[in-house]
Image 1 (cartoon, rainbow over the protein chains, first blue to last red):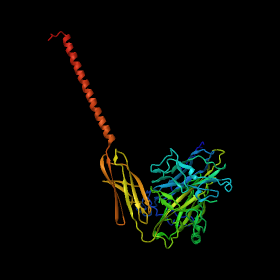
Image 2 (cartoon, chains in turn yellow, blue):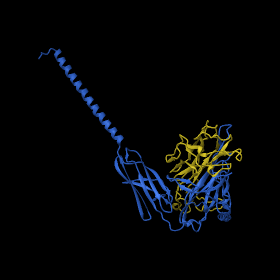
Image 3 (cartoon, rainbow over the protein chains, first blue to last red):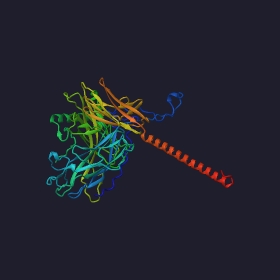
Image 4 (cartoon, rainbow over the protein chains, first blue to last red):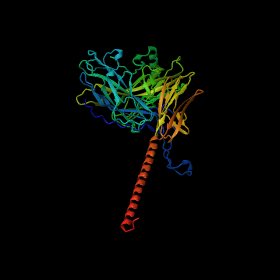
Length: 221
Length: 349
């Protein structure tokens, strides 16, 4: 299978920075649980009003910016095709690309397969099922037949730890594909994953078998 | 048909994956949800478009704060999360609740059967909502701790999930039917400390360092275990875990270790001395007791020493060669002079 070129990762922008206050524009109330903003650091002070002569108008302004802790995920991949004939082991490099931006001391990205149709026994959770006739075609492909890895050559931030440098089978309980202990790059960390069938496609009924992959980025605890 | 993760609905609270809560709890959760919405009706309204919010292709979601640490004294307070749409498409978000635990590297692991789960205690309002492009929305989170809850930390992950959407790009060849769909989400871990007598019993079990270094940065790894019933935070000035070797201090990344978890954190000693037998020490003190781990590194610039030896040897060889060459020249000059004397008719000996 020839992999199409991956869309260039959209550069994420800076974490939310607010001038003066982070009040809810709808209510005017500050977030209830947001940690107290750090003491604003004057970034431009041209003169102190206190030192100006009485009655003299001054043009001095103090600009302060408070930056909240935040995590952002940007993804422009809706889906990809990992198909082939019985016995094939298709590979799709750079199948999924996403960008994570955070000013926290680390984050992780987990992939969890979710079955999107069919009537399955409990142990088949996360399996690939027929997308055209899930009620009549009860064949399934175990999700563990599909493996994920970090795309070779993906720039890894200095503080990053690629959890799956080689192909790791998907699991219904989720697979952590990336983790790092430092903040992302200023424009976000561009991550990319390859997918492959780690075992030949089983002899299931001719059909299209579908699965949903939930990509979840999370801050450390 | 069974979807492993189902979105929350009013009056239906998920207990782990696919397990509905008992009806009494669900009804109460629904009532609480309604109460929260009624109490702050305007908070759920989307904010007007903000030109300062980036506009990126595809799904773009930002959440702040990215985690909730709710102290025992704050358990009854309503928490607020802000969701910002930085993408090019309208977000249609379902909220899911999952158990959460900690991996050995300190990262968050969403796990349905995680211990000390607070999944049944959480109400998110609204639990299904939209966020227009370039706007923000505020979501309220309330924790209802049962009266018989065990004192100490309980954990939950609040996941804001955007289902697969056609507006994003299909990464398939022309004519291919995509069979793997991608959904995106951000998980907000929450630590709730149930009031009561709690113990913070954190200890350092190991400090690992290479026994020998020939120079350059030295990798260190510290293993920390929390045996008490609350988490221990190594975040903030004065709280960070550090390794000391004489006057040198190596800081580990800020992190927290959950109750019952063992975490190994890595750090680099970027500027070690050129040569030493260095004794590294890491200490953690809490609850009146102190644990210490040590490691020893022998630093010797082997490559530099070998290079210096090689350079010295080269100098000696060059000196010897030069000396031999000089001797030959002198001998040749002497012989030439003697021969010239003979040719000038000097009387033979």
